[in-house]
Length: 268
Image (cartoon, rainbow, N blue to C red; front, side, top):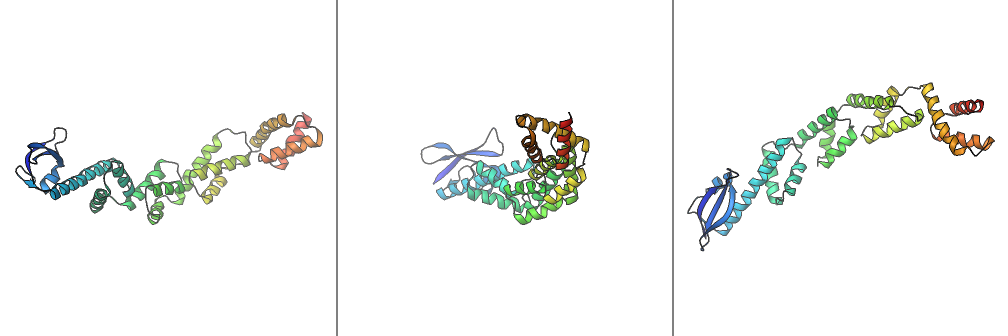
């Protein structure tokens, strides 16, 4: 048996106490505890503690420290259950203590993955240009179950997805480009896919944002044509013409426009 000889308040944290004990060789520092643990075990000077009691006190104090860490983590913003578990693991709390903390936080309604997922989707939909597929991936990474994700994504309706994606399309086409319209459409499609929009939404965006500007397309083929011409300038006649046609076709220009460009080139 060991006897508590003194309990003092820590200077840097008034919610924690240092406990000193005599194990038979005089007073020495034994451990520190949270105020809640001190009260729970009714620790006081002169109290005798056996080895089992010391282990249980330390375990309960670990739970309390983990709980305080989790609450501070939650104070910044709402978190998923997995985020809190990962946070506590990084702080090197043991699994049993983490389990107890998660159970307590759920009981206090501090953890609710359904509410977290819905809030996360609303935030992403309103403050970023990410589409639902990317948001879904991020929720999976945060440990959210498939069914909860599916329900949460209703917070990002298709009308809003289309509106955001159309704005991205309009912004894309405002940038000067020397590519063919076909290549520009492919680049926009790839950009929207990377941002997490569905093929269905992308097709609507292309319909609403793509305009067939003949002058711009002619400027583009002239620009690309000059580059291709420098590559095949050593060829002549039919061979030159075929290589030019093949190269410009691969760059997304129509046969009709290619013929027009080559005809224009011959006259110059």
